[in-house]
Length: 172
Length: 341
Image 1 (spheres, rainbow over the protein chains, first blue to last red):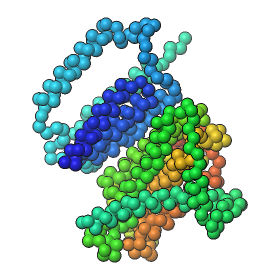
Image 2 (image 1 turned 90 degrees about the vertical axis):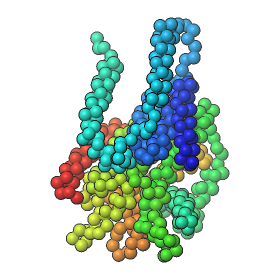
Image 3 (image 1 turned 120 degrees about the vertical axis):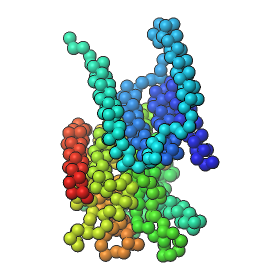
Image 4 (image 1 turned 180 degrees about the vertical axis):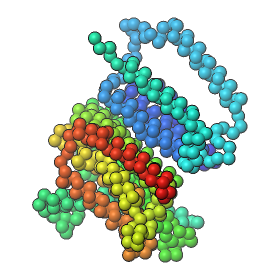
């Protein structure tokens, strides 16, 4: 009963905070709401008996990555987002991108409904293994799942190189 | 069961009360030690040798007017000191400070002298330390003052730089202790080598201890790393615009953070409540002595060393401390594999 109540509380916070991240226009508040959402997710992990994942969620996302976000937002001192597109229509609001976006959203909706209804049963979890043991997680990550683990790190490296290339200004 | 529950609640309130008091004591100690180092008298008028000075300070702060700049973001301006103080107190909740006790047979089961025993306690300390930066950053931004903003920006850059070394120093102890629970780590440090050297991890991890202490100073924003509030450049940094109790909250958070960093250092490197001469049930005396020694060291550092320049701080963090911490972890891991500690 208690944990069920906690689940709904955390879930509600996560959903409402995530919605507000995009629903209001002050970038600083968006960052803070995202942190609140991460906090609620971490609470959900605790309820799933995975304290390690919960704490890592806070350390990595809420503690490190969002500090960088906040740093950049503060450094640019970004004002409220523009609300009017009087002078020229925003490229994303033209007919083509709008239709494409609507199509993608509909596809995502269908996928979600399909996944939620078809999946069922026990969600996640390794059969017979506890996810709360740090030792076990480490062992699994570096033996059974070492290939996906390394691939992920290469993916992140590629993304970093890509960001550097995109951000580099052409020198005359 | 109920007796244990009541004891647990009393313990929680006790820890909270003691942390509040420790901040007051630290204010007094800081002023007295600073005076000693500068050949002054320090506070001596309120009470015997000025021991009631912190009380007078608190009363003064309580009765000051609460000010808020017109252009400040009202909500975040009020939230920032709350975040700072909450994080400071929350971090101590996983720190054990004594052996299990039944209070002389009064309790049916032994009570752990720790608010909550989490099996990933080291990570919890680290997570809350990484959250506490938000209090400072938001204070800096919401004040809408350039000094505050600069203080907040410096603080976030400093925290990001030193958190990595801090985490790696924790990792090296984790490798030795083979556990993320602080209680387990402390219990592995009982006993002695050769009959007289205590089995404290500081002797196995001198470099780890050094890195932890340096990163700890940077994490608590103390001199010589007190850039977020460098008064000669930034008036008072992130809390320039704060007054009265909201200023007191930042003040409180700084001292409670110091106590927490010292307590965690004691548990990780100095054997926690283990020490010679005293029985296990009086181990908390050792714990207090060790924490007190580290706190004194912090105060001593502050009044002895001048502040670094900001670029020096960054260069030191990334080019010296981090590589040393990485090598330390590698060597420790190799040692643990080879000797099988």
